[in-house]
Length: 335
Image (cartoon, rainbow, N blue to C red; front, side):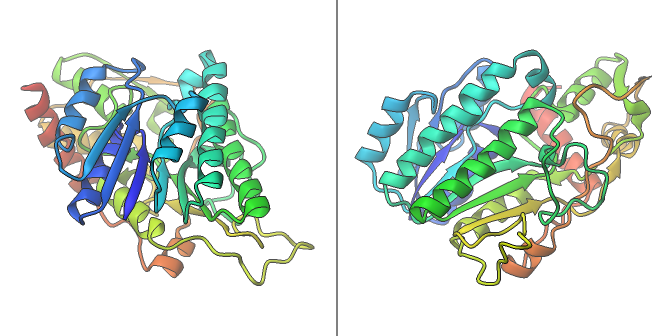
């Protein structure tokens, strides 16, 4: 298959590209290589697959409507995976308009390209952040998610609504994947795992919010990629039993679906830090602080639909995943 991967120099996009190439797919990857974090890391990720004979890389921004139109005019894709986005909950509080431009306007350009390109399936990254103020756990795709508490979360919810509109109006099969705290080798420097590891190795105090008591459904990168590919290979179809008088938020009469991809096993932040300490053999010096604005206390994925439809759920334990990350970190940063 010929697959477009947006954000292909990113944490998930690069790992996905490699996996697709390993199974002999042709991959067109695009990325804008912005400086939200050190572009050198993106370049290093990309170096793992940029010279593959079935990979073609284009430096472009999904905010550029003309460039996106030309891309879809030039290539006939069998599937599209949209991972390009402005990431980060906390950054969205300080720079909300960036999220409107990239995550909403840019995603609109991708939807238009898929519409006119007659794409068989669009898979796109949503986020566990959409659950916002919800306290009913585990989080289910069949629950209402209309109370986001950051613009990042709001932009991801908007993506789901925009995709549904295209599925309904133009019969475009779309599937949104709500990722739950993805971690592992090659992750972003602004993510907790890299920040904590760097500070612990330097003998510096780490800031631990909500006094380390909030829980996250940490999901290892390889598990995320496997889930994305399984979903990509099976186009969304209408739910024939969908009842408009009792509308299910996770499916539709249109070819549109939403799935959680999480480990289905939330871990308290202090236990996450303990796994880092064990892998490094160093005790962390912690500064315990209250919960930050925009953060949710707990995330916990109900993955029953993923198991039912794809016979799949993530399996990597937190100790296994953190150990693999620490091994990569030491090698990459030569520490």
